[in-house]
Amino acid sequence: MGVPATAAIVVRSERDGCAFRPPHRRSVHRTMDEQVAPGRRPVAALRARLERVPLDAWTLERFGLTPRKLPFRVVDRRAPRVLSVSLPKAGTHLLERAVCLHPRLYRKMLATVWPEALPRWGGLAGLLRTLSPGQVVVAHLPFEPGHPGALRETASSALFLTRDPRDVVLSQAHFAVHRPDHPYHASFRGRDDLAARVLVAIEGDAATGLRSIAERLDAYAGWLDGAALVVRFEDLIGPAGGGDRDRQRSTVEAIYRHLGVDASSAVVDRVIDHLFSDRSPTFRKGAAGGWRETLDDGVLARFHEVVGDRMVRYGYA
Image 1 (cartoon, rainbow, N blue to C red):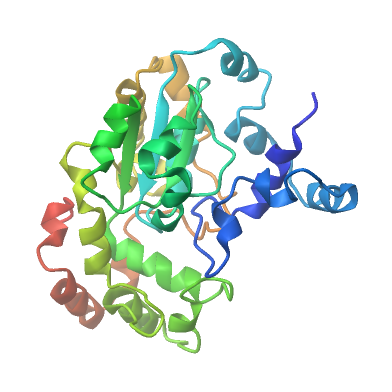
Image 2: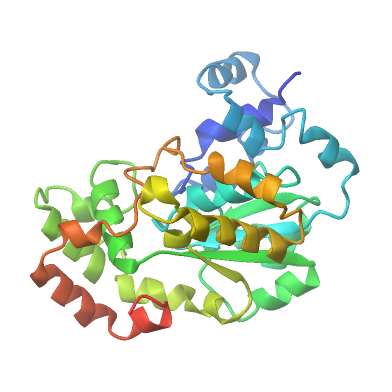
């Protein structure tokens, strides 16, 4: 089976699993097809990109290019259109796997969408209209009052992934310092002490535009109010990440029932057997509750001072 060039290029052009937003790189919001010069695609450049792409089983599954999924893409016009939203560093790749391992669902060949990209489609509704049945778009989109209407208008379904904010700041402190191309790398660079980096993730950094964890939680909180099915990282991770298999099974089943696709035991069990993966470039540990072993009392005190009652709002009190 031949693999479309766009399917290959997308894998290396993104920073996914949990994509991030390189500053001043508008191409991260473009479809991968557009990144290879519309109208003329230099063969040598295209070949060089293809040679760097790992065309593995997950890549094909993720983008709906397996023999099992290709027939659905052609004939299944009743599959849902899916918006998968998450807080950055909440486990974006894990939720994507849970959705795209389903036989009727696959990711659109599009980098993870940030709010700055939405004007390109005229807003969220315009983006969702580009989805074919069964396609999934992955996004880090703070809530806006118009988003529920866009979902209704386009008959799309939404998922919202959350994670204990203490693990979110810990993951960010580990990740950004090792990625010179990360937009907030400068906020963490030169801070050898993990506690100091976690404090930056908690408090934010005006010099780079990094918002505090409180501001980030506020920006996404609207998704908790019914526009999307709320999925908790801790419920989805399963025993490989310190969670519970029964909770994982019931969570995956709830996702599929929300999306209106087959949630039978055969489908769910196959998915959870393959759900945990370290293939994402942004993967570090993939575990729940790591903050308990890492954050000292002083850091935790500052965290709760900044976050306040938002932990109750998100269900982590």
